Amino acid sequence: MQPEHEAVAEQVFTALADPSRRAILAALAAGGPATATELAGRLPITRQAIAKHLNLLAEAGLVTAEPGERRRVRYRLRSAPMRVAQQFLAALASDWDGRLDALKTRLEQA
Image 1 (tube, rainbow, N blue to C red):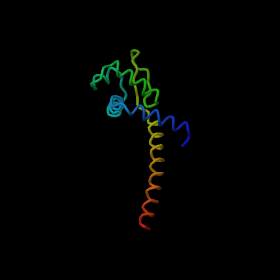
Image 2 (image 1 turned 90 degrees about the horizontal axis):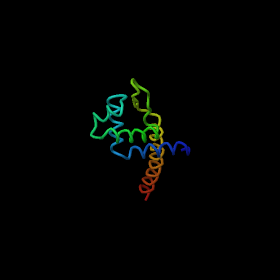
Image 3 (image 1 turned 45 degrees about the horizontal axis):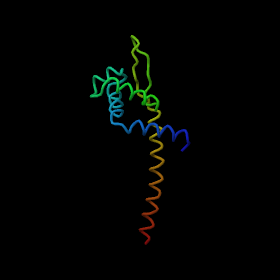
Image 4 (image 1 turned 30 degrees about the vertical axis):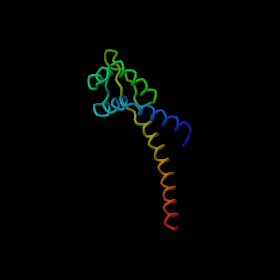
C-alpha cells in the first residue's frame, strides 16, 4: 500500500478508536447531516465535546463541514477515507490468508 494511503488509514483508525467518535459517525450515518447542537441532542455527549470530536473527524477526512443557515455548520459523512482503511485491512487479510493456506498445506503434507 502507498505511504499516503497508510497515513489516511492511520488517521481513520485513530479516529475510530474513540467510542464517542464512533457514536457521532453512527448518528450521522443514521440521521444524515447535522450540526454539533443537533448531535448533542441525540447523544449523551456535551456540545463542546462533540465539537472537538467533529474537528478530529474532519482532520481524518471522515466528515466535512458545510455552511448552513444562520451561520450554523452542518457535518456530513465522507466515505473515501473509510474505503482507504478498508483496502488497507483487505491487503493485510490477504497476506494472512496466503500464509495460513501455506501453513495448512504444509501441515497436511506432514
